[in-house]
Image (cartoon, rainbow over all chains, first blue to last red; front, side, top):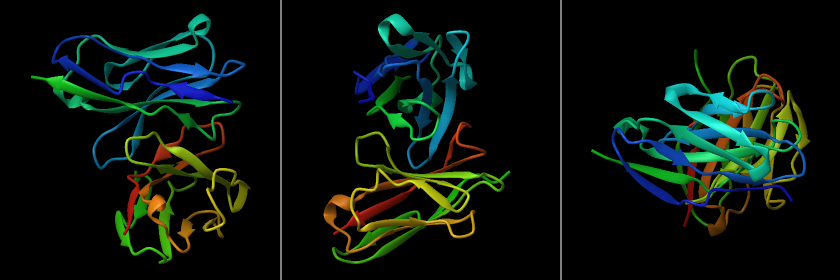
Length: 113
Length: 113
């Protein structure tokens, strides 16, 4: 069965520091991969997505993610975190089309001033 | 333009009560999705519509859950005889097609006492 693992429940970084959020998936073929962000009381906002092609994907708000097939990973990165980035981040996989997304359990990002 | 809207934003129900949750998708979006997000978890797929046709309801947890989209726009998720385990945030998403980006609403937080 397809699954998504986000091993870090919470991550705390200082403002201006770099960030990497981990995501591993289990799926037999190349999946469609997504990162969403959820702020308190808000819906999920798409940061970026990978369907095929270049394995380094650029997204909104200065985020990027790299698809590594050999590691079944799709980690999210940002070179310099801003206080407004504090939120919950979800990695998701769409097995054979991009509907019926399967989400990880999320990583809550806290930003120290 | 207007995003996905959901109402009510908050709902408190007594155990055994029926509830109806509404989703207004982005105008022109063919596909509509419902997800359930338990506290501290990622969203889990419930059901999927393409226009008025419910093409996948494999995620509905029991026959107490029913969703409809009779005119291919607004959708209602109905839960009959609510139980405490139904307490969650119910998210609606819409997309232009089933392989397009899903845009999420703010969710309805349901608390069953």
